[in-house]
Amino acid sequence: MDKKYTLNELDQLAALLVEKYGDKPVWAFHAPMGAGKTTLIGRICKQLGVTSAVTSPTFALMNEYEGNGKIIYHMDWYRLQGEQEARQAGVEATFDYADFSLVEWPEKAPNLLPENTQHFEIEILDPEHRRIFIPS
Image (tube, rainbow, N blue to C red):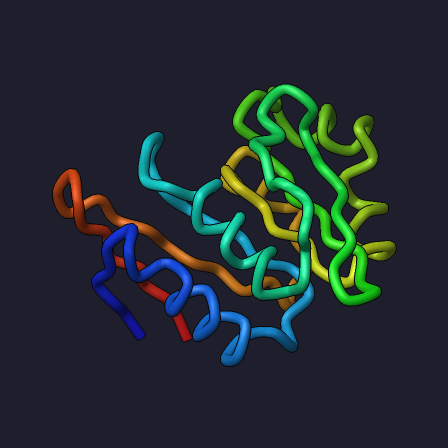
């Protein structure tokens, strides 16, 4: 599946993704800097019932949220120097603990992602448009 979207369509896109892939506990977002990964994840968290502000965990590595009684981790692996650093930060344990884990920059430690991870690729088409590609 691939879908072109704008910022105004993020709520509908997030609802669609949660409906179609909500049974997958780990989601990995592949995209260049500035593609809107954090913004989309914020909307996904809203769909999952998070009412607090969703912010980028770039410096904290991961933020924990609660939505509808579920634990959601939003991780940003951009600053990781590799898998060893991710392990030391406790990334693997969060996959067991969380109901949902949403990972930005998963290519920094790809071998730590569980086998059943749902991958999403975001492409910047122009300043207003993005395309999300979901491999089957």
